Image 1 (cartoon, one colour):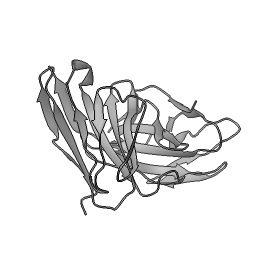
Image 2 (image 1 turned 30 degrees about the horizontal axis):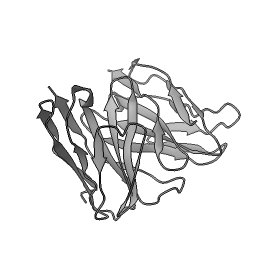
Image 3 (image 1 turned 180 degrees about the horizontal axis):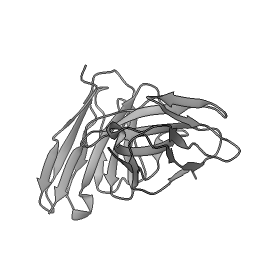
Image 4 (image 1 turned 90 degrees about the vertical axis):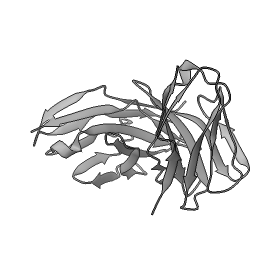
Length: 110
Length: 115
């Protein structure tokens, strides 16, 4: 079946540090891949997406590349800010619904 | 621009009570869904709908009912609440069922506690 596995957190970084959150997936066919972010007390919102192999999604300094050969979609940011503190969810869409990973909590301190 | 609106934001129920979580969207989206979020479990799909009059089960449907009489509304009903249903519930909508590359819009969630 379809599934998403992402690294467990929490991830704790200092401001301006480099961020990587790993995400791998299992899917039949060719799913679209997403990163969603959840700020404290809010619902999820789309951060970035990619629909085919080698596509790179980017937004707000975050990037992720759809790697079919490694079935991965790792999230990266070169310099995190305190305002990036949130829970990040990797997700895939293959048919009727989004399938989410368990989420990774990021905490950035100044 | 309201987007997806969920009510209530917080609710405490006693075991065995019933209630309805409301979800409304003003974007004329075909597809709506309900998720529950539990610590260490991520988001799990409860029920979804691809249009008015059409609903189907997701990953964890037991104990929940849904209906879709209009495009805008997709209420989630708990007929007899149990402590295992203590969770944060999110409603989501998107414009195109089954089409890839479609962004889902989420409500702000309902935090439900069953005692």
